[in-house]
Length: 433
Image 1 (cartoon, rainbow, N blue to C red):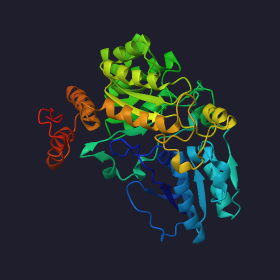
Image 2 (cartoon, rainbow, N blue to C red):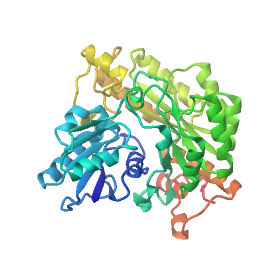
Image 3 (cartoon, helix red, strand yellow):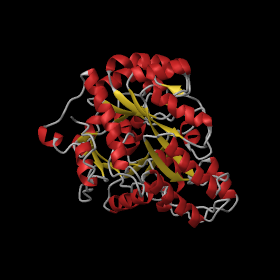
Image 4 (cartoon, rainbow, N blue to C red):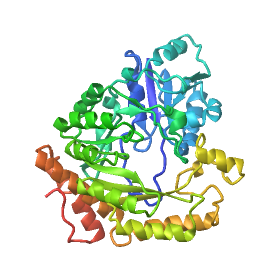
């Protein structure tokens, strides 16, 4: 049976440097398929969809709310041409009821151990409208190595520099943060994969640079210590969401190749200042993820926060506005209070205000988002800061003898050198020298 697996296109944040990472959901889904299913993957962010193709079935994997309308359009075209369409992925779970109108089947939950049943139904022409396993996750031991062989590797680099591959060591999250839907999607129970399975997958990835996409690694101290200790011999270089603020954990993370972290920065406290410093003391970079528009945010608070970010020497910062995605506490509160003014999912980009903030107008919050980007990157543009992070990882790779330069013509176009030319900052060090 031939299956075309499609990842719909989606726009980057308005001020974000344009690059593309290999998507994680599709390769995890592909690993759960029965072996007789022949998979062709299309990342619409990087290639066109052949709507004249006639596979036996199309599967659409949607991660983000801003992919759902495009996903529905794709499905409608194929279904009009007689090709059945199955939906899955995070955004499908968040928008399940609406998606059913565009699908032959909607799969909700984690795919491992469930695909044989679904494809048996497909062969018999008896697909169910909904396969709902959100409350019944499979045993974490059944999660296998993702099918990265379906990816076109040449797509996922930036100016000749190899980007990261995505991998996960756990599912679920014991936290339930106000703007986050993970508690709904993966449950409140932390479910770590067996460490030996995670290590085997990490070792098998033909890329030294990884993004461990777990919601937070800071959920079980002993597990973190055991995982990082086993990762040290791999000499991989990786980024992730928060690491536990514990000296032993941070030290082992650094030894295991921690490159940088995405760290939420929610106030101007000494704790945050010291948290960032402790990462830096261990040679770990920090990209701050800064959410604007919470009820406690006044205009002055946001301006003070931006000034604070400049003082604590973040390596990068990504600014978004509070976006009330379905199945989050933010959605429940703002919808109940009648403060959401747009329900057009194409507006849910995290850089467009779709609700009425408590202490300012929606327009003013939108202006402050632009102010945050402009102010933080005024003296050193985002691509330059990115080049410094890549210089850091290349130095670590060279120290470990794991740096593998690509063809000379790509080296001549290397990241730091190219950015230096583009911005006419000739003093910028070339990170590949």
